[in-house]
Length: 125
Image (cartoon, rainbow, N blue to C red; front, side):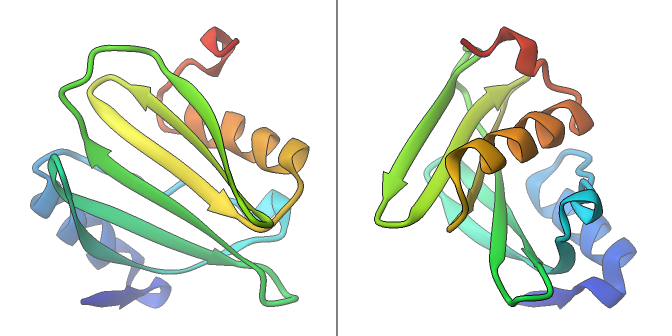
């Protein structure tokens, strides 16, 4: 099931209940991306949330959020064609920000998203 950004409060509450933890949706407006909506997805650790953002040119970024039992402060970059994904773990949550944009720009957005969600990107090496 997908919920539109026009129902952002409902989206956040619904996904928070499904993941059994409070969630928030970081704004990417300063980077030219607006929230389009979100959905519930399965993961190895149980339910996961996916938030979708889009810019005026139609390019999309996704933020994937799931609980994790891993106890680490990890940060990784994955490549798949022109799509890049920054993945990090913070306070029992795993996050992945993904999109077909330049690595430097995606890293800047990932640092801001991590900070907005209460993480500590300064620990990334």
